[in-house]
Amino acid sequence: MPNTVEQLPEHNAGTSSDVSNRNSESNMTAETMTTAVIISLDQLIFSRTLAMRTNVRAQRKRLMLLVLLIAWVIYLFSANILQLPWNISKKLLNRASSPTETDLRMNEINKQLDQMIPHRRFSDMNTITSAAHSVVTILNPQKTYCIGDQLDILLEVKDHLGNSKKYGGDFLRARTFSQELKAGAKGRVTDFNNGTYLISFPLFWAGKASLSLLLIHPSEGVSALWRARSRGYDKVIFTGQFANGTSPVFTECGLALDTSTELCQYLDFRDQEAFYCVKPPQISCDALINMKTRNSRVSYLDNEEKMLFHRYPIGMQIMENFNPIEVLNCDKVIKKKCQIGMKSPVPSGYALQGKWTPTFCKLDQLNTVTTINNCFERKLIYLMGDSTMRQWIQYFSMHIKTLKHLDYHENGMLKKHVLVDVNRNTHIQWKKHGHPYVTIHSFSVKEDTYVSHQIDRIAGDRNTVIAISLGQHFRPFPIEVFIRRTLNIRRAIERLFLRSPDTKVILKTENTRELTLEAERFSDFHGYVQYLVFRDVFQDLNVGIIDAWDMSIAYDTNSLHPTDTVIENQINMFLNFIC
Image (cartoon, rainbow, N blue to C red):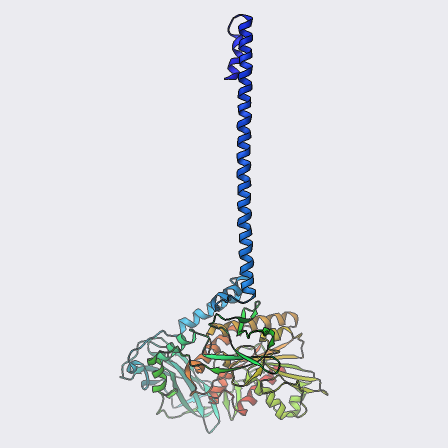
């Protein structure tokens, strides 16, 4: 070692020449070793530098490839060459704020519904529920009853072979009525999930009361409808019209489209709503102007399930041979005047002599032209929803002659309807809700907005009134569409109340409709599920509730568009809330 050689003279005697020679050899060895170390260091540094340069080049190449790949993907999507399937596009919508409060609430509601609805398959038509074989027993029968009493019956359902069923889930409709008194009310059904039901009939009027209990769908049919509803968006076909000079172009549209062709995507990222149209070649997506729909031939029912709805009539009477009961006016109940914020029980009211009477509040009859005009003075009234809400503005136009139509240069019944009374500073408007809107008639989508956005555009004050109704157009689609829409509307109402707590909001549930319509798309079972969702979502808001479901059962209308009598009573309750 060099250090050892340099120390040797201190420990060994010898001649000076020997020492000089040894020193010379020692110096040469040290220089040689130093040179070797320097060369080794240089080689190490060079090799490391070369390696670093090689790694940098490789990293640059990888980075350039990654940038080129990202640019290529962006190009493909911007040109709509790649299309996202419905579930993936929904995930992208949710990714911005996932999981949202709305998503969590939707999942909660959907889970509750799924637990409530039976999941029953069948292989023999004779094993489904039979109205004729089921047994009804009146509990604690009396000769006479008092107003306010409740008549209870026990229903034991049996199949077509006369065997008792061991599970529930049948869709039943209970009603008390008197044709002579023009009276009616909905009953309550409690399912014990073992083949027995408690049917409760509240008694609201003095005189005769008949009882009705209809089997709308057996539990096997309910299970089939629920399963079919959740499987697809294609039971209704939307056709969009795009402006193209003098030759309009028509393409398929919908809440979801199973296609790989280029799409126009109309997305609402805040509310997580989506609508799509097949993009016409060389035409902008902004050129969409009109829409109409038709029923498709798609069915998610198997042949046995279809036979179930065709073999037996919908709405079979279970209580065929029951005599009317006698009800006396024993005690008079005093109720407070109806006002916004009151909780609506089930049933929420009854009809008597053609007039609707809520069970939880007192209604005044505000049906004279003078009374209505005084109520409407300085009012801004926004009616939003489907054609059952449009019936209201048609009623106002027919009965209040001082209200004049304002022409917005649109055509058809689905255009925006506006009535004004300049002298009283009254403005009433009806506008349909956003997609889906199911109708064979072409309608403009130029100003289409979801109800939540309509609410967001209203400043609000103590003279502003908003009335909302939706449901019928959502029946053919998975329940998630309706749940999300109601939750979005709720959030919009909450935003409205933050900036204008004096604004009055009235919510009208959907009503029953024709029993003879195709069950898979439009059954009242779908409407009833939505009715339950509607009441649950809005139950704790400071709003007025008009229970059109209860009304239509009480009046036994079974029509998409209720009679003038029902509309008049809905409007009377509306006036009691706002006047």
